[in-house]
Amino acid sequence: MLKILASLVIVSAGGICGMLVARSYSLRPVELRSLKSALQMLETEITYAATPLAEALGLVASRTDYRLAPLFEETRKELLSVPGCTAKEAWEKALYEFYPRSYLIGCDMAILRSLGGALGITDSSGQSKHLRLAMEQIEAELKKAESRPGHRPVLGSSAPGSFLRTGKIGF
Image (cartoon, rainbow, N blue to C red; front, side):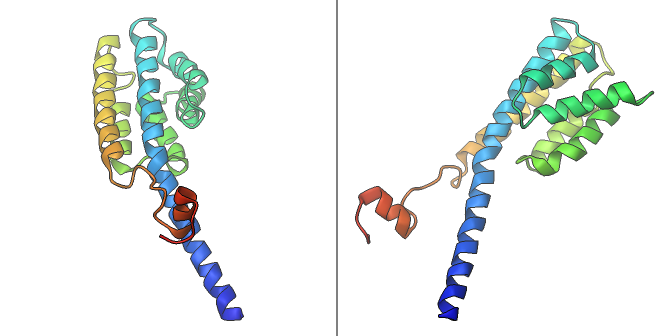
């Protein structure tokens, strides 16, 4: 009896781990889409509305997906609260705090780090070019993430899934 119980615990733990990994694969494209949208908002605020960077970051934080809002809000807070803090330093600190809670991977973070180096140091057209480059790179990562074989969950890859698909026990 104890062996059966231990086996069930092990199988259940493996299933839960698998579901968590699958969730991260499915949520990364969602975050990438939201990130691209947030960067478009930031570009609009900087380029067309001529909003100062700290204020633009706050506006984007208030309008973007709740998962990404802390990145922009923390950058804004850092810019306003630390005298002499550059946009790059504030962005890096916010990225450091944001990364563990996100589903983004290393190459996504590399794109964001390189963008941070361009924020606040050029005129609005220069920042617009850097934001557009980051958006294009994020779009490329999004296409890669969506084309991964494991991106779409497959119903029926297990016995319970088979039952849900056919209504019968067995294959």
